Structure formats: structure tokens, C-alpha cells
Image 1 (cartoon, rainbow, N blue to C red):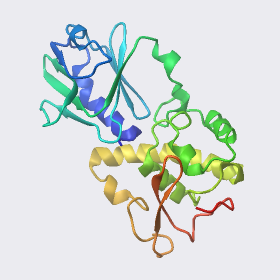
Image 2 (image 1 turned 30 degrees about the vertical axis):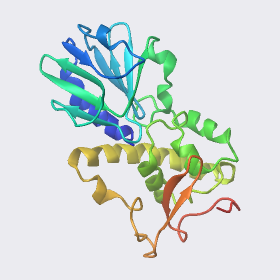
Image 3 (image 1 turned 135 degrees about the vertical axis):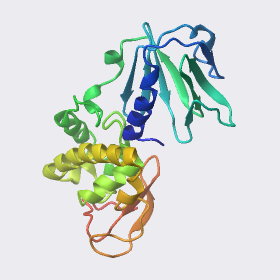
Length: 248
């Protein structure tokens, strides 16, 4: 599933179409009147966490690529088209994704202060949300898009490793200083991840995600499916502190 930095890159790729009129709209999405999108002008593109927001004068189309979503610019893929647009200078097609139409103002729908890539990100608000769930596993809280929009499984694993926190730690047991450091690291790492994606070097910079040996201790890393929903966690039992007596 694409994480926040990857969606920002998609936004940058599509900004060439801002200000252009949709010459043709097609797709199998059922909850959007595709036939009515023709002649609409794309006025702006925004992102919120893992969500792409295509803004038109009176509505917004929300696109979430989910686990297996794909997109193609100026080409078509050999799979069922969910939604596609043709503009004067090119086309974009979306596959295996969730598409929805938003009629409300986006400020009424999204809390930008929880988006790790947004300028208005608010660390204090995120910390308050963490404290509302003391019995929750920290690996689950990091993936909750209502708490930290844009953080996905790769970022989750990397920031927990950087901050020396075991993924099965309970929120209420982690010291406040460690939680604050974790939140700051989510932001700084996400920005670094964006730079790596733009350079095509992200896999070279993973320290724990999909790796086998701890760079700090030179011991084998563990890979476990932890949390609800169950997601893969990569961690070092030696240098990542387990702040609970949780058994998994």
C-alpha cells in the first residue's frame, strides 16, 4: 500500500493536468457518475495521508490505492479500469482502488494537523490521541490514519527501530519523552522517505523493514505478524524496548 510520501509523488506527477478540462472520463466505478465528469476542470490536487484528492469547482474525487491499487499516466494497464481521465495533454488511469465523490469542503472532512506530510501537522494533538488508547499496541496506533495520516507499514517499522521501541509495546507504558520522539521521527523519516523515493533509493535506506540483520547489534532481526489488523513487524529484540508484559 502506498504511504504518504508516495502519494505526494503521484500528486506531483499529475499536477501537469491542473487547469485542464476532462475531455473523456471512463471506468467501472459505480458510486461516481462518470458520464457527468466530462468537461469538468481540474482546479487543484491535494493529498491527505494515503489519499489523493482531485479537486473540481463543486466537488472532489477521493482516490485510495488500497493494497493493490495501480495507476498509469499516458498508458493503460491490462486490468479492469476503475476510473480514468483524458485531458488535453495526456491521460491518467486508476486500477484496483477505492474512488469516492466528496461534496463537502475538504476542511470539514479532513484534519490536516494529523497528516505527517502537511505543514500544519500538530504533534501535541497526535500525542493526545495516543493517550486516549493506553491499552493499544503501538504498532497499531502508528497505522491508524485518524492519528497519523500517511504512515504505512514500512514507515512504521523504520520509526520504531530508529526510536528503539518494540512494536508490541502498549501505548500507556511508553514514556512521554519516547512518544514525543516517536512522533517527531514519523515526520522527519517521512520527509526523508519522500526524497529517497524521488531519487529511487528508498530500498537502499531501509534499516529494518524487510531486512535480516540488526545494523546496531549485528544479530538476526525478527519478523512477526503483530496487531489488529495483523501486519508484518520487523524488529530487534536486543535494542528495541518492550514497554509492556504483552505476550504475542
